[in-house]
Image (tube, rainbow, N blue to C red; front, top):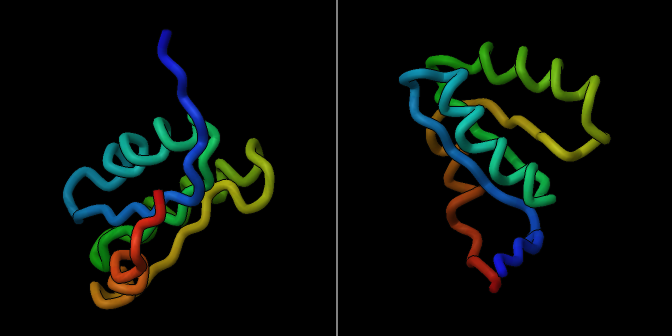
Length: 85
């Protein structure tokens, strides 16, 4: 038996290449297992993530997918937090 439980908010930072695919690869497993996601796209390709978040906002409850944009150091706030298991 495989048991999949939600673990909490997922912080996801994506590189610049394949922006739509990177977002899909990171969001789909997290959302499918019941976790909300804070997604940080590359500063070079943020428009893809913003457009996709608008599409997802029409289908998902508020707060399931959040997108933060900015330079690389803005992603540091996501990665500097200690992980609680």
